[in-house]
Image 1 (cartoon, helix red, strand yellow):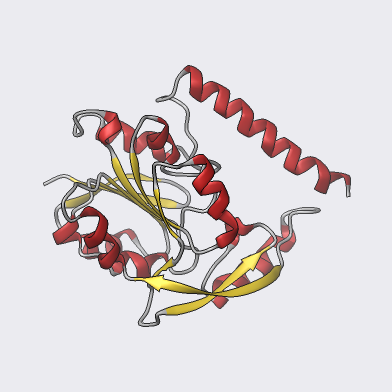
Image 2 (tube, helix red, strand yellow):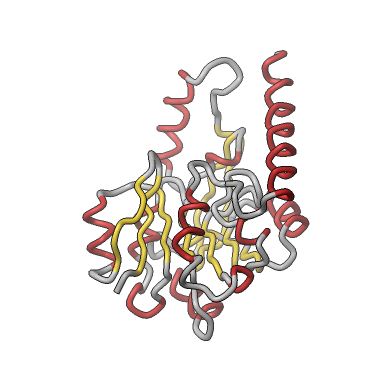
Length: 238
């Protein structure tokens, strides 16, 4: 019980320390899980005239700050589109990132227009995939006291096609960073993108298929620039 009460306090204190450091050195503090935002920043510095011009599409945005691949760019003056199906995040996103456009829906991963979002005790594990939900429940049993996950609700949410979102928001402006973190359906969402037409400069996608499969979808103009424990990062190089 004590552990359950202390953990949110630890997270809050860690967040406050990160926020303070970001005020002091805004371009050197990562908000992502494995420094992916700093990798993207190092790639984009020489390719975008000013950092405040950076535009991003964050699919599966979840918390607007914690473990966010795009919050660093927001802090630097950039803006973009956040796609997040869980309405519990809406107030946080609108409060912390008012310059961004929020699409309160999921990204399409099959032909359906809507699907059930399976919601966990920690919404960071939310998924549209029943198989992924079962994996989370089973594996979290070994994470220690108070960290096990259980499904606590499901809610039907609309789904938007990736290329429709890209056409609406990036047909007349460049897309510098595309981040895809849609637990259990990452590769299906990734495969649905028309990379020839929209050509994001950097793509960060949670690993669900092999690197070769990702490169085959993105096409010969993309190469791997970073491989972390959870994500591939591809960049447009030609």
